[in-house]
View 1 (cartoon, rainbow, N blue to C red):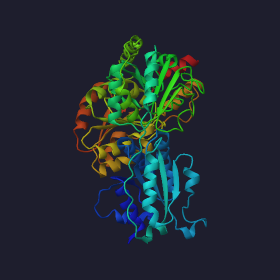
View 2: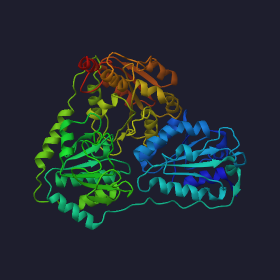
View 3: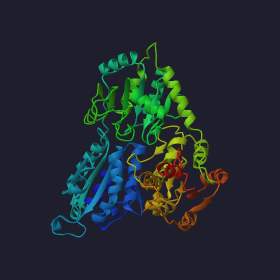
View 4: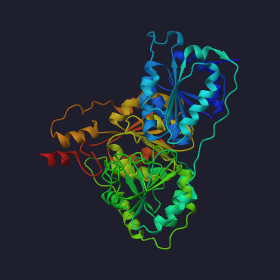
Length: 550
């Protein structure tokens, strides 16, 4: 006989869980007690549930298995919403476990009671309250299956206190293998014929469910067909950016030549993603519901195909299965698009040349140094803000998984994601980037990094404001600045107060030696970059925006 807490932890281990992120709560005491005994699951205690959920989401991105986070009822579950939303938006497998009041107090204003289906129903693939200790293994197995199947995403399970204290005699459920669907031979024949007749094809890659094998097979296909491949928003690590067929990033501030190529493609092959507002420039590049392009859409979920766009060739298949099939296709003798591919690649390579911006610290140069200096298997994370535009433009991702970035546009993601990455891959260099606004949303997790001896490098881009909002403010309401100016701490001193190293950089040349020391350090390092506020984006200064509106 085991109590519900022990059944829960054993059930997670049986499904392959190795990392558990949590902020402890009294409703999960039986589960915490079960973790006291050494086992396959390593528990990471965080300082905020939102950050814990983001760590679990990052773990899901890196491993393809659901990242697991345990939180307590009302406040804990509410705080975790931010991380669950990232998993929902970014198609990441994740499992959120929430402790609940005892069932006898349900609906009677129990302390911190929360309606999980009402709160998470719109952003989780499945929400279930487990009301019998004997059914915990079954619920966990179903949650793993749901989180990984079709379009991956988060699953939420609630556990009333009395269920975790109750005892039952039940076996752990067997590990659930992930589902996979391969494209049919008929689909691939149609695609081959379509490409044989194409003149301006383009491949657009993104979404969740990718793997190193998928990226490798995609590269083989691209080489054989000499076909241009672009990544959707913050999915740049799906193909080595040095590959001659990689032609850029369909993200914010898209390169005009790439935008024209997407809009003008006669055949558009979309893999793993249903392109939304950002990669389509608000559906101006791919019209909804009827695209001008012949659209080939390969996605593991039938529900996603044709959800936004008329699709000429729908293919229900995950990225790895589809890319494996692509790599087996023989290229046509005539590839009329070679000139287009070369032109797009040349445009992408021109975009990598750092452009001068105001100030003594050139963020473009810093990112270029970072791209050259980091090992090929480094993992780089970031949150949201205009600083990420420099990273997305000037950093070359060398392979999957190398990028942890929220396509959801969630601030505060970079630091928690980096901690999870370094825990899972201690042999790799891991660097987090954050703006000054971004940094203080989850900055308390530096304590977590220090506590567990996680030697990440965190680069804070400090321009003293919420830069993205200020940029739009100056464009729409020039000179009327409200709510975007920030009073910041000394970030380097703050890092040292946590027990990490902290360095402030005030000119570009000082960055490289500091970075090298940080990468070889045995504890976390925070590098604060003092950025001129006018250096708001890679293409345009804040003052230029203001002048253009005056």
